Amino acid sequence: LDVPHRVLLPPMFQLPFGQGKRWASGSKTADLLVGGWTVTMAVTLQSGFPMNIQQAADARLGGQNSNRPNFSGADLETPGSFADRLASADHPNATWINNAAFTLAPAGTFGNVPRVISDVRGPGWYWTDMSFIKDFHLTSSKSAQFKLEALNLFNRPTVRTIQGANTFGNANFGQTNTQVGFSRMLQMMFRFNF
Image (cartoon, rainbow, N blue to C red; front, top):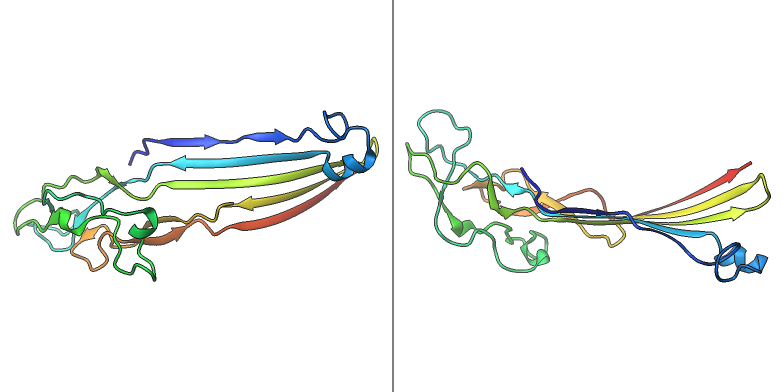
């Protein structure tokens, strides 16, 4: 269940405006409006997880757990963009995995598909959170802070395969349409220190 590529970027920028900064440092009004701002981000970029393909029909002699189909030789992934491959109201039959890449293993045999296939992976995760923080220096002993946070800033869905979608022979085999995480969320905070 490896994730071969995972990058976490946490940049932080203090804007060069206001008291003690390069620009707008001599004016109280300018400091109040544009000074004391910090912008932070948390960016997560990672590959998708490898797929675990099973088959619905019991081909083995014995229990029904971990039945595997056979490879057919066709491409494992369906072509198209991220949106084209997601099952949705616009694309109800879209699949992430190519149905034609597999065949049912005959009864009494083990399929040749391994437990985990690294060559076909679920969708990757591309997630960006961002915060805008404004510090107010009121007196030597009093200060305040305003923070606006945008979680999932670009409102990009993070999805996974639906239950049963990794089971060859099921009607929804290969579909990816269950959102994990959440849509863009904005939150504000104000803090007064004394």
